[in-house]
Image (cartoon, rainbow, N blue to C red; front, side, top):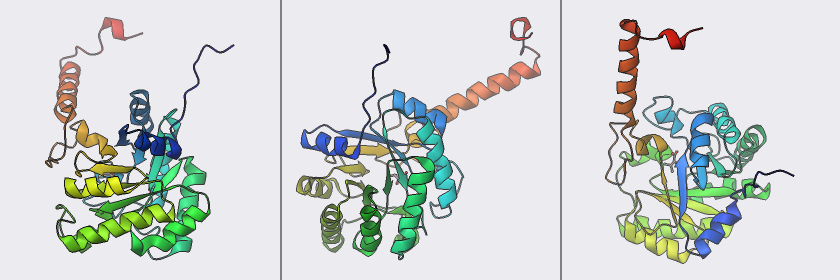
Length: 271
Ligand code: KIV
């Protein structure tokens, strides 16, 4: 008989049950095997293979350049490191907008080739045909409203969205539409806390906020921001739990020094 306890996997249904009983959902981004293992062992509910990999892993200024193949590579690595968390993968820019057949092909590739559990897509009414077609294939979809970074060149800046009533009303309608279409949840990025409260209370499916205040049903951050690896990114909504950029730099400086002064390796560190 095995002494190991079976790990109960988080599913899209788990997240909806969590919302129903008022339990907050924790979500962080992950792009590789080693970090995914740590996040999963730490008890994170959801790992998002975000297209923010384009920024933090590849060094691009925006999320636009990352490709579907690159997202699949990151997703495969994350899935190999996870036993419990739900793994959601961003459909990258250009893989779903304006073409629902292409959207379905892209989502199927992600699910088949990576073993992830769901996809996330940015936008509301304007991408509803793509969402419908992906859902019709049995692939769970998470929405993403508010600041949608794949449209950064339309917005012009990364400032708070939906402060004006016209945009807030559009967001309310889009949130309702995403639920009606069958999305299992949605990210709300950088919108006023009051609007997040209103939208979250009006929906049965969970909202996951980033820069959207305390009333979302869950929270997501980019892991590299939380750990202080991306040291120059310091928006008001970000809580840093570590200062890893400096800590890693100090460790590497010590290593360089030890090699230079011939202290590493010592007698005990050789064969
Ligand atoms: O790509 C990403 O990391 C995201 C989160 C910021 C929600 O979409």
